[in-house]
Length: 402
Image (cartoon, rainbow, N blue to C red):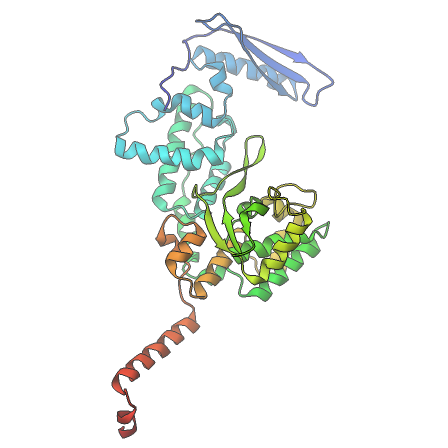
């Protein structure tokens, strides 16, 4: 947390609005001020479509400055604003409460919403953030702590006059959370049944895309057969693939961020090893050949070489329409990961190995994939019968007597 004070109270601003007809947003609003300590004359600018909005911005900046909010604070993104006022927003909390709040702020709020200005955060954006945390497998207490940290920061923004009301005071997320975990009680409801279903989906998505780009289908198959996220598939490079052992060392993921898409470390902050089964090895080899084996090249890109996200895949392939037409109305891109992990669990992969492949921090999350289907239950009964009969009738003699 930062202990740096916001600014001197009652700083005076000068403002003006300039019309620039050659710009898409022609009205430039500017405020300038003198720093009390250094006498420097910094400024801040924003562009608007109309003159009234530009003048309103200047007046708001003046009002905030008179209330003690520094102009730089008033225009900074949430992540920076949070660091500047964290000591105020979290005042009064005991360490046992403060620590999980700060963890939620750092690990979930900042990566999801930190690039937005406080005034740009809405109830809808908070709802989508919570939905994303649920999809990522965050527990109830984790989401509660993250929301509590966000609510405190946004309450401080309200007190500073940056916003009129606190959009982080959301209700009903517990119901959404419970619904998501109720679905996981039957993981096959969120997973494709078999390879044929996966291949049919991949082909349909390619056929529906405007460019008929085969790479869309390759991404879908690779994600499902490795139990990985779309962003992790996008982050895969040639150098991450070991063709001798057919192991993918998953080191990074592509995510939206300030200024556009960027690569960062995996969700668990450490690399993990994932097996590449024969069904997708030809895909891997063809894509390696397509980039002439360059070790730093991305294995999967869009048709023009760009990075792929779940939203890019959805829009390019008309995912929702295709999934619905195939009878998979429920299917999300994240369910490709769910499909792969469910298949591995059904194939008998030990839970501790599955946890490493999935990159789950909690074994409890991995165990959600281990619910046996009816054929496994029947097989368990047959195994028990064979075990008991082997003990009672070791030589078969008593069986004959009966």
